Image (cartoon, rainbow, N blue to C red; front, side, top):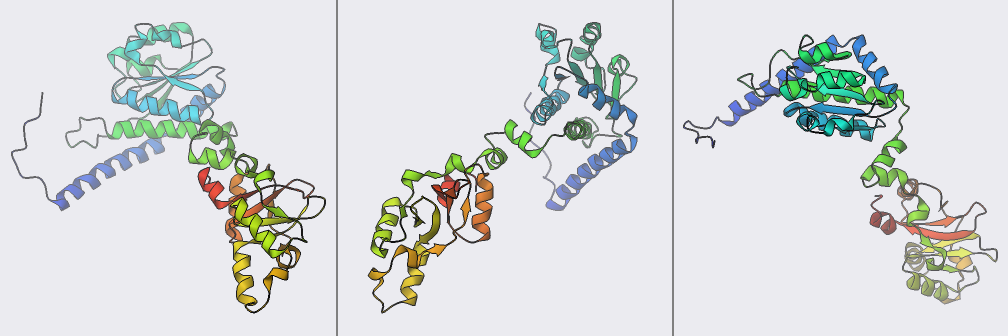
Length: 335
């Protein structure tokens, strides 16, 4: 049914801000009270999941189900395999998602959701551990559960104390607390997180290596130290790097000459015949270098620290194998 249009003026800005602050205060108080009640049962829940050899099957109905989907996603991305099972669909075949190696995490503020209570005896019959997030430990869900996590709140943030607001915030926060405790217990590190998020910014920063984004040797402008300045400039123009590597007979990078070096050279030697200079005379010796196996973000940090836009890539013996500049890093979305 479509709500009827409001018949009274909308509240002014001050009234709206007061309502927002009251709602936030109610949710903050609910979270603080939940934190104060936290006890050994939370540790028992963590130990139960750590002992699980399968997955955490999260289930919940309505708003609790939406929260459950998020909790399952957070667990899965932080080292705890998890999935969401809709309780209504579970009664029509999806209960087969649960295996004897799994743990079930059921979420219901009242603990009496009809679709959820209908499958609780079947879950218990399977012999899998049942964790509950509920506001009522004496509910049907609470009585069936092996471990109860108390997510009850004194009242909802809804002014009518009806719409799930503070209670779903409490459930969400408890799920986050569970995920954080589990990832810490598993020794989950940022690079583990990145492997679960290869398409995200963090994944790119923690998984992309220099060799993944660098220009190969054949695309890197390079000249011997005996090359004339004109030859060096031609190599730079052809390579499109804005720099040229200066290498010795063994292929070792002994210097670099950049567009910036050229500008500074012209400013310093206005009247001199620059054509007689060689790459060895104008190069910047002992150039900044990186290894192919380094993280690309480390190369970006080095370039930012030294205020340079290009860096040479060398192997462990100092031989040139490629080059990298900030455009390459931007294309790879490392920076």
